[in-house]
Image (cartoon, rainbow, N blue to C red; front, side, top):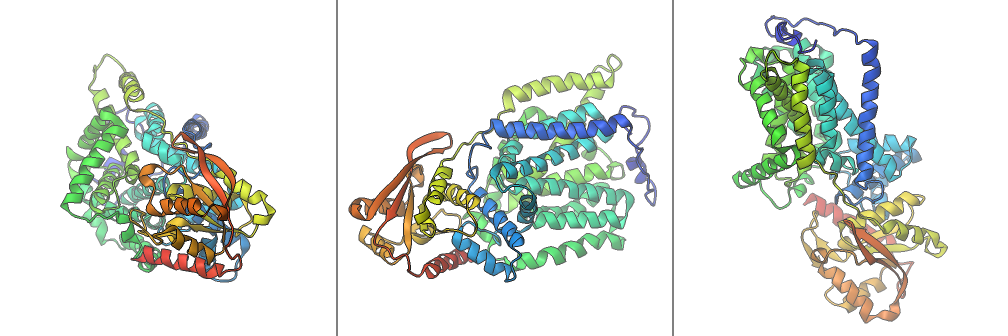
Length: 577
């Protein structure tokens, strides 16, 4: 039932007046709706792909965010484990995989995102465009879900506009163009709260189970999913439906989430604090987070959308008696507040991606605010759709002129380095050292793994073997203070090829980078330059970005496994402490 007719209360409103909610099946959509919905979903997906292309996502490498390469390699590892039908333990396979491609980070992050990647790449290519299309699917599903819930109450025009608006937001564009877990978290969180709203209306165990399963999958995608634990109490508080607590089925989600999620987080409990970026929870962090996310929200949504969302929140929640607040709006408000509260309290860093689950609620309340204003704008002179359109057009124009932009971050060049290494038969068994920052590591290791029969080359990261650094990479201490000491390490190592990344920004160059350059200059006869490759960083071309050297005087038969095992153990210790 649409809101164009305001005299008749909706089923959701009536359900709060009855002791027991009635099960009412929605009317069947007509043939025009059955055709229009697939068409609008296709348009959403097409727009996302176009924006990905305009932002350069298909031309860059895994460098949009420092974690992107690790997400790709970890998903690739899970995919290869399934494809090879390994009989030995998953942990042994993962540790061996890490010694070849030292970007595996399962344990630091939960497994569900990688299971989804593995399922996708078992059927489709493992290339970056393939994974980007998967990310576009997540965003399209989020936009289409928002379209459906807005269409049910406000009609197709507002639903279509808000779906396109969600896709156009800069934070949604940015993370739709990267292989990151945050978009999937936003989608699963959105679906989860809508299931809880249906449970509040219908009281069925199927809806409670659906909420529990989606909560578990969200939490097993990323730790920020624990914000969903606050949704039921907040929703009950906003609606006054405390009677639901007395029903056994209300606790079914707890019986689902705890057995599925608790074992994983208990085993990996020592790894989570490493994401806290040297900050501690408290009032100081809360104040910084409140300021950051307030300014961020104004930047992403614009003042117009924020104002409408506030109006919608007031109209749908604040000014109503508890029994008048519908379950749908209650859970959307609960998701908005729980997501914000977690971002303000847990010091996981100040980043816009942590508020992605709050985007659909903000836009839904903005639609409610726009509808409220439209009903009071020129009453009796224009039809309600015309009044809505009169508001939509200037707001969209303001958004396009002041807020909308296509995020661009072009970083690439290591694909050519990987292709060179793989094209040389004499380097088939070579042990490689890549001296770069986390961005360069991600680009090179992921491009190499994507192109070769895995597991193939052994790769060492200078950030792990030439220095001692924190898990986040903020603290570095070179392990070798002189060129002689560094060359002595090489003499007893199996390293034959060194990829020296000269495109690293000066602010990111560490002592061990400089020590490697000194060793090359001090012992020129030991180093043979095999090739120079241009590297583009954030759109800036470095003509001598990556230098590939062969290193003589090392022992290819040295204890490769021992050296790499030491690197693996060091990484595990960094994650656990």
